[in-house]
Image (cartoon, rainbow, N blue to C red):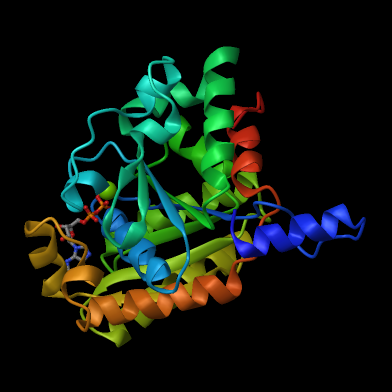
Amino acid sequence: MNNDQAARLRTLAQGQRPEAPLFAARVLAITSGKGGVGKTNVVAGLALSLAQLGERVVVMDADFGLANLDILLGLSPQFTLEHVLRGEKVLEEILLDGPMGIRIIPASSGIQELTRLDTMSELRLIQGLQRVAETADWLLIDTAAGIHDSVLKLLMAAQEVILVTTPEPTSLVDAYAMVKILHLREASKPLWLLVNNGQNPDEAQETVDQLQAATERFLGKRLNVLGLIPNDPHILQAVRQQRGVVDLYPRCPATLAFQALARQLLSRVSLQPDGFASFWRQLASEDPI
Ligand SMILES: Nc1ncnc2c1ncn2[C@@H]1O[C@H](COP(=O)(O)OP(=O)(O)OP(=O)(O)O)[C@@H](O)[C@H]1O
Ligand SMILES: [Mg+2]
């Protein structure tokens, strides 16, 4: 328990209303319409930048892609969420320790099962998540690209969603399709737009303007703009070395951009009471997606 939580417990004990609930956290899912736009790199970049700001970050790797987060960070998981669901491991046993104190839940192979669990597996996961939540401020979820049921379920359960696109027209069209689907399911879900891999700020800004114009015109919705990550060859070099770019190249343009975005998140995303648990309740609910 940290000092903050201890102070809040004391307040509770004195019968006063605490300012923020115990174990409040922020649960963000990172997604895209088209694959290969940089989601996994964005998750790693934001996680490490938040960690640099003193935040305790857990990343759930729910991506089926080849370049999984664990590979990206040079980690090799022996066990995954599947083992937890089968009752062979508890959540803490599968957590991977990443750079700068971030922790990773390797979940990709178990993610399809998440939406149809029996009561025992569900209980195991809820209890595990609640224990992990006691020592975390953020849960970032790296999703697979595209509009699959299990991905949508994760997105709907998360508190807020970061939608990654590149300036490429195909990526932009698929990003719009994703905004539309999320909007039709839950118009009030906070949606952040992140433009990755732009050649220059003008190109990235044009991407924001085009998507914003389409969503305003056809959906009556304005997106929150999180910001831009420039095209930066350091990202590929870091991938090749299986290191986080923020860790390996502390002053490169991509790192500086990730740090600026992490500061934005910290100031603009509010704490969710009972963060991880309410994420889980949503995910496990019987509601149709
Ligand atoms: N800002 C950038 N500058 C240069 N290269 C980048 C940038 N962002 C991503 N890349 C490169 O793009 C490729 C795809 O990135 P990444 O694996 O993060 O995408 P993804 O959206 O997670 O893919 P998938 O949909 O398969 O999960 C990687 O080779 C990465 O190095
Ligand atoms: Mg990926």
